[in-house]
Image (cartoon, rainbow, N blue to C red):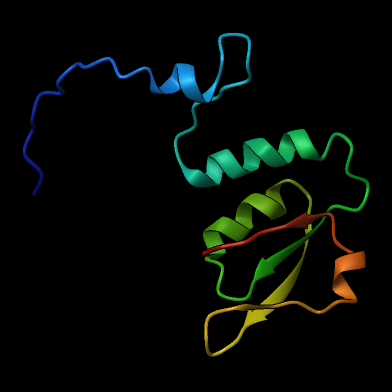
Length: 100
């Protein structure tokens, strides 16, 4: 259960530092919405529309790519949690998703 706690208003200048007044800033409801928003911008000039994503990516995150019309290629990780890329795939993709 989450109890209501009033938000304390405190200016910290975060948005001004991250995005100058004439910059491009968008607020989205979730990371998936933010990803889709970015893909909409990228796909304006992306003729391949192939995303290379980690094998362990959540299905709901993959939905953002599919909604934007991207084909999916998956890469694996090794026992030390390092990405294992197929060098041949790197010539076929247009977007690379990296998750730490």
